[in-house]
Length: 74
Image 1 (spheres, rainbow, N blue to C red):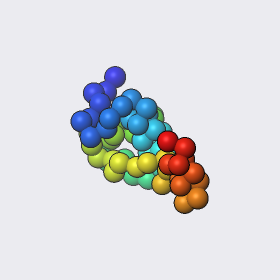
Image 2 (image 1 turned 60 degrees about the horizontal axis):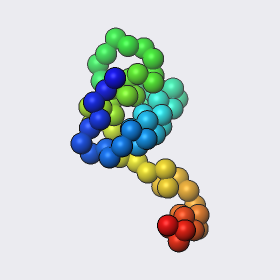
Image 3 (image 1 turned 60 degrees about the vertical axis):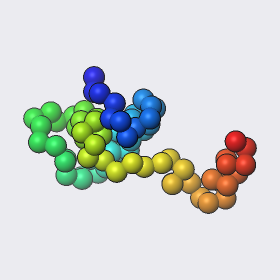
Image 4 (image 1 turned 120 degrees about the vertical axis):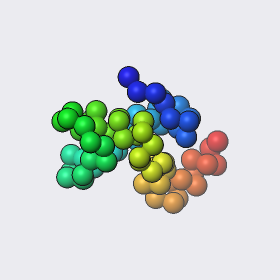
């Protein structure tokens, strides 16, 4: 298991970032860590834990009108 970086507030955020990064690795992105592990999911978790991944929000992928609706509901 990986230690949660201080910049990530919860496990859900960690998993979301790692899943998004694993998709990028699967699509051909180069790993940012030098490990012998070949599973993209593990590489992605290592990168997120090391703070090598830019923080991303799932709302960033939503159309602006959906983001506004979600903010109104909160």
